[in-house]
Image (cartoon, rainbow, N blue to C red; front, top):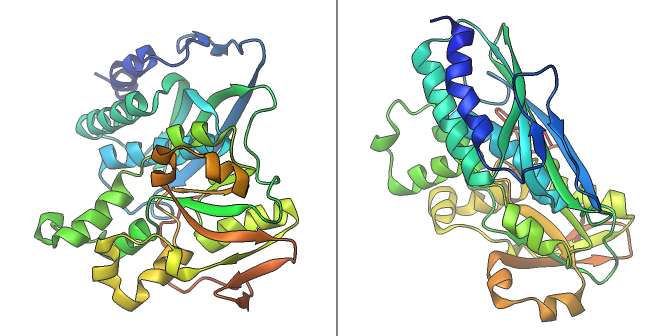
Amino acid sequence: MGEFELIRQYFLPLAQLPGSGAVIVGPGDDCAIQRVPPGQDLVFSIDTLVEGVHFPLNYRPDFLAWRALAVAASDLAAMGADPDCFTLALTLPEASESWLRQFAHGLGRAASQFGLSLAGGDTTRGPLTLSVQVHGLVEQGGALLRSGARAGDLIVASGTLGDAGAALDYLSAVDEHQLGNDEQFLLERYHHPIPRLKLGAALRSRATAVIDISDGLLADLGHILDASGVGASIETANIPLSAALRRVKQQQALNYALHSGDDYELCATIPGSVWKETPQWLKRELTVIGVIESASGLRIDGTATEPGPEPAGFDHFRSSV
Ligand SMILES: [Mg+2]
């Protein structure tokens, strides 16, 4: 069986996964067709991952597929969009059947967990590179932008920060099972980021601005401040850190949380009055880390900060925004 026959065999089943039903023609014709329901906006984004730049050489194919789709879907979460479908452009050196089978397995697991069906794709021969375009839907005018933050809004972050960035130190481990539990926890955060799709949807009627943390909290919060024309203060004592990160990186844990981005958590701004009315289950997903201010710039524990270059070592396999 040829390579491209294998791709059809392994990838076509991913077109049968339930999306929103908006894809009315999937793979097999010249184009796919997505029917945008009346009153909805189509929200879409593309991410490209290059071997050796955005992920390690000889990275496990099932982990690669998960990461590629998760990274793309995270941008839908940041817009508050409901996931619908994706297209995949895959450039492969000579790929073995076992590589393709594992890749498709990881892609299928991710696609069904995130609610994305495969609408089409393309395969070419060359250095291993993936481009994933995701499509989502949101009520017309209801997408969450970076530009809506206002002075007085609380700044919140989901989950814990810095875990996946800290995992970069262990990606070259020959046998991950030889590592301690904490290091394995950090690696799992790198291998299997979970796009915060439900959280993004829950923020739709509440947040004034949202971004997914792909480049690090300070860099990505900076994008909100720039787009919104505001400044902010954050308190480092409130930055959510996992117990594993604290134990493994000790005094350096906070630096990872501020500067590394591979966790794909969300950073959002929410008016104080809305936060008071926010249900407990949603509050448990979020930590208040600071407040938006009218004076431009970012103050960390009261000290003005220049968003300078990141410390070396955080960007080996960093993904794009
Ligand atoms: Mg993003």
